[in-house]
Each structure stands twice: as structure tokens, then as C-alpha cells.
Image 1: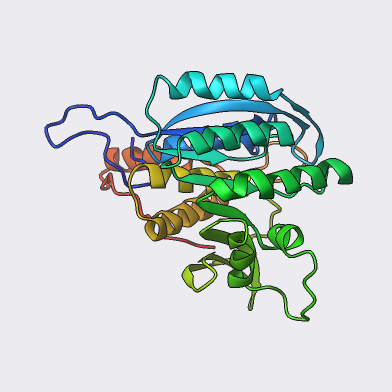
Image 2: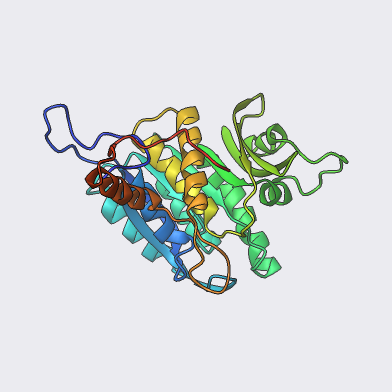
Length: 306
């Protein structure tokens, strides 16, 4: 079955090749919108093997997050170190992990593996109570950002967190956000959801000095949940399989766009990305081939509608 992200699963001799491993720290999401479920599906689509470390569980449906239950830090640490002692990991992804204590445990693990690229995703925490949210954000900035290779987040979320005292009438640009992240030790920031003209949204991979890559997509009419976990997971997996950062960023954004284009609404709330849309496309190609059409193993990575 073809994958939407171009990686090799076999050697030139046809022998099986071990998949690169990515460790994902995230909460379980029973709605399937984000969390570890999103990490596993997106990373598997990129031909990476996922080592999922459960840091807690959301209480949520397709409309809202109603709460979160965090594991204690010892349980998180034990899960991760047991797997890391057995398997070589090529990258780490960190999503929402529920508590400052868990952030501390993950930061300590990351410091023990300083050569591994770490992709950190910061979702909106507007559903949480203010005290817990502030404590979590402060701990993330102090403990995990110094270990982070690429920070991923929505423009408004990152601005509220990293630039709370912004006084300029003009909204912060991607380099402004990257500059604020760099003050905590982050070399690269992927800022998504920046409003552009003509009903477009832009995403920018930036450093304090320059914008390395830009993607523009047409707005979807539907409200999606789970996009950020999907994007950051795909990015971590593509880095793990050996893509350079700019290529990995471009392909991850294209993958997300296609997931959203094929999105669906399983409940009464928000729409969700179809992270395995490429599998359905493959089924259609086989049917077309039986009817006399041409089947192909090449996925149109560059084709985007939004």
C-alpha cells in the first residue's frame, strides 16, 4: 500500500529494512481527534515505528475537552526508559503531557539523549483552569523548550504564550514568535494559522533571523480538531526518516492539508483529519486498474487544494 510520504520500506535487494523509531509523549484522546492516536496514525503514514508513551488521558468528545487525567511522572519515566534501553530512537515528539512533573521527567530524558531532534507541539489550553495552565506553560518554557529542536503551534496560541506583553498594533510575525522561542533555546519554530489575504492561512518555518519556508493554504469551512498533533507528528517522523528540516516541514504541511481535505465528522462536534486518506486513494487506484485505468504507487506529495 503506498504511503503519502516518500520513504523506502525495502532495500534495493528487496530485503526488509528496519523502520526508524520515534518516541511520542502524549495523552490518550478517546475521541480520536488528537493525542497518541493521531501520533501513531501520522507517523505510521510516514513509515516510522512509533513508541507511544502515555502521559495521561483527556476526558473529551468531538466538541470539547472536559478534563484531563495525568499519569504520575514515575509512570511516564518508566515507560520511556524501558523502551529507550531496548530500541534506538531517531526523534522525539512531545504533545500535551498534563503536568509540570511530567515535563520535568521528559526534559531529563531528552537531556540524556541530546543528539535526538525533539519536536514539541503546544496546543491551545484555553479549556484548562488558569492556574494549572500558567504553571504548565511556565514549566514547558523553563524545562522543555531548551531541549526543543522545532516548536510547533498555532500563531495565536504561541503569541499569547511567548509574547503576552506585545504592544505593537501590528500582530507579531513568524520571526517575532521565533525570536521569543529562541530566548528559551529553540532554534526553529513552525508557526501555523497566520491570517493572510483572500481567505488564506499561512504557515512559516522561522528562525529569529529569517523565514526558511512558507506555505499558503485556502481556509476550510469546517472547524477541525487534531490538526496540530497531526502536523507535529508527521514532522517528527519525516525528520526521523532522514529528511532535511525544510523538506520535512513542506511534506508534513502537505500531508496535513490532504488529511483535512479528506476530513470527516464522526460525531456531533468538530471535523477530524483523515490521517489514512492515502489508503482509501490506493483502494480506488486498484479498482481503476481493474477497469482498465492506470494504478500508480506514486503519491502526489505536491498536490494541495487548501
